[in-house]
Length: 213
Ligand code: CDP
Image (cartoon, rainbow, N blue to C red; front, side, top):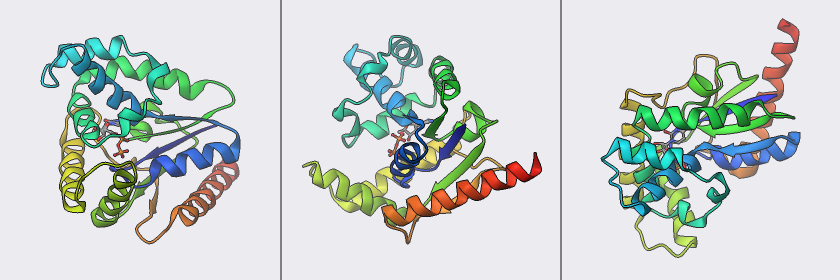
């Protein structure tokens, strides 16, 4: 079973994906961490984020054991990730790992921007998670402040809107809802409610697929 969860920055997709994976006993992959790690490594290897070859080299050398590095969640890394995520060379290098992960037993919940459209177009269930920009900025602001990062809510809002715009307008695998993805708007939902609603949508989608098959 493969569940694809996409959506814009700080929409709640990562938290929902983690809980869905635990619920069904599936493995979870946060693909945003791959792009964040490529940005981190490009800079650490002396490269420039504007250099697609340097980013692709960092992607080819990526050690997936470093994906839980807390530094990847710092302010600014999401922005850097979105710069290297524009390069088709980077995306091609990361594609094989994501597909292999998706198809391993017993199945997986994968979250990102292009999972339902490019990485796993045949996923059993696809969710597209959104929320208003203001609510997403508030959530990310609280997360960063709790981590001791000094930033204003307005700065976070400007950052995530600019990043969404870049992710939506790029040529390579842009952020887009797959035609067969179910929409989950978490603007007025807390984490528990978002999880329960996601579960209901997944159960309904699997029921439909079962009836169709
Ligand atoms: O946690 P947040 O939603 O802020 O971001 P993330 O999921 O960690 O992704 C960081 C950046 O990586 C995004 O803004 C995208 O540019 C890029 N990304 C992507 O291009 N494709 C994916 N499947 C996942 C992330």
